[in-house]
Amino acid sequence: RPSLRLHCSTQEGTTEACWEVIRCIEQVVRERESANRRKRIAAYRHELERLMKLMPPEQAEDLEAQLKVQRMQRSQRSKQRLAKAMVEGPHIVVDCSFAPTHCKPGVESRSLAKQVEAAMAYNRRLDRPLAIHCTSWGGEVAQFGNYIGAQNWPVMLHTESLLDLFDPSRVIVLSPDAEEPMLEFDPDKVYVIGGIVDRTIRKGVTSTFAAEHGMQARRLPIAEHIEALQIDSSRSKSPCLNVSDVAIALCTLWQEGDWRAALELAVSQRKRKPQQAKPKKVRPTRESNELGDGCT
Image 1 (tube, rainbow, N blue to C red):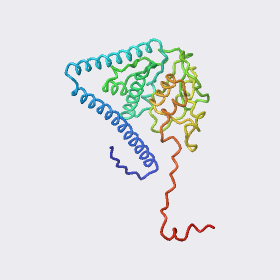
Image 2 (cartoon, rainbow, N blue to C red):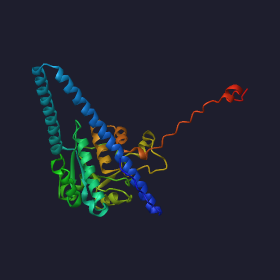
Image 3 (cartoon, one colour):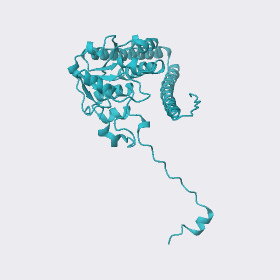
Image 4 (cartoon, one colour):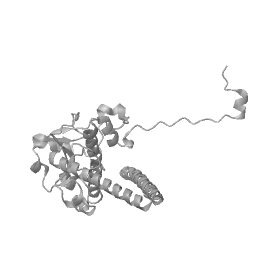
């Protein structure tokens, strides 16, 4: 678990400390989920090995060969689905042109690369994957991305800008500041996610970019599902989400056609209403048992 050593004397320092705590908690949750998945895989392999030891050698070898073929077939089908999506779409884009001016050097640039990796990992497991692009791929984001293996991701990495690659009339920029919600997934459109890591929220960046270049801007329909998602009313009805969260929401919407299911994955628990604490049970004392509750 990450150790927290927070020494804050000013209000600004306190806010930054709170963000640090939240980041550390989310990291712990991700590590636990990843650890649980690894434990399940390890348990499966252990049980499989145990069963194979009980089989005759010829039968165990035959089973191992069949399992290997199945793994290769699953991998091949996944690669075929991704290759088809790369050509036919639908397409979503992470526009990294925002990174030099809106991501702090170092930690936020690395965070953006990791979020692209998380979106890619989720997308490639789907039966109906999307084509993921990164435009204006360069600088620190690309350096760290290449360090963690981006050149092998099923993601199209472009050094060119978004405007050089896609017709603005087809582009829909996703922005929490947009007035109109995105109500359906149009496979003929190109959905763009601004490559911004918001430690401090910057208003109007992506919506202004869309307006300046004649592109449509839409927000995720979180406000329309606020009750179902149990969003805390004291928070924004259109909260800023991570790049990976928005990408996962789009992938899920295309896969299942259900906005609620998509937003359930996208909106983190810290943006939901706090769970009401259950009332504590009062253990009866001998005196209360003898006297009753005082009501007649």
